[in-house]
Length: 305
Image (cartoon, rainbow, N blue to C red; front, side, top):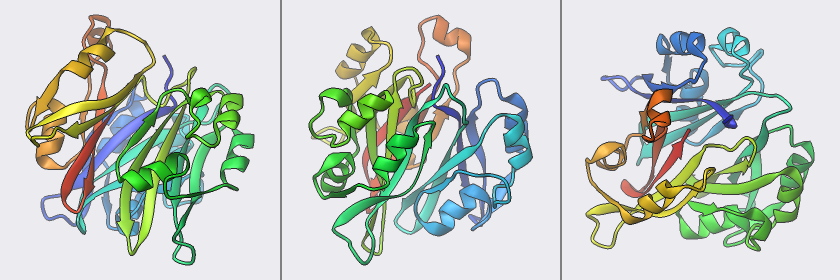
């Protein structure tokens, strides 16, 4: 199964918190790029992770040549052409930067978008950057549409202040671009609130096609009413299998497993399972990313590859 995202990385502050260093990554067969990445570190405002740290909001880089991206030669050799960096803050302090790297080819359909309001018009969200792979028509439509609070997927995320997952866009009246998404082959959408700076809202949307999904499984975990456990609020699986039902019945305590560790620390985490583990029925490799607001965990979003 090919996924739209080819590489996933987590960069965390060094002990003196002045640089970002490699923490974990999912590279699939791109072993040479992994080796090059593990040796890197980034100062504030340096490279893709450092730029996201300095900006205080996600950064999308759709062209590596002649840019601030530090691993261009290795990335091009690996067939990578686009990077998205999402900083995770607790208040004003950086906890980590999550980086997604994608590659351009005719077989990868999907999109990752960054929505924000402007200081001049703070009541509407518009695409300020994004990566659309081969979906040129859908990109044009998306860059010309705006959403108010509560309208469309970005507006729903803005209103709720929480991640929102829509599993079948073709049937979702709340997804205003559903007809265009269906035409482009996009079937599933995930929206995540990522930061608020000086009254500016930033929301990431991940739009997934059936042939090349963003991930094989997406889940949103939230604290239960007691605040003692995480429960699976919603989930999507490329394979409509029994695992989806299992997740709906379990809860995770703080500090327990990868999800509980993310809740305990506020730091994204990766579990890297080898291919034979998946074949034996164990869980896929996973990225778990916290959604933090005002220093409080609102949700954990998991991407399973």
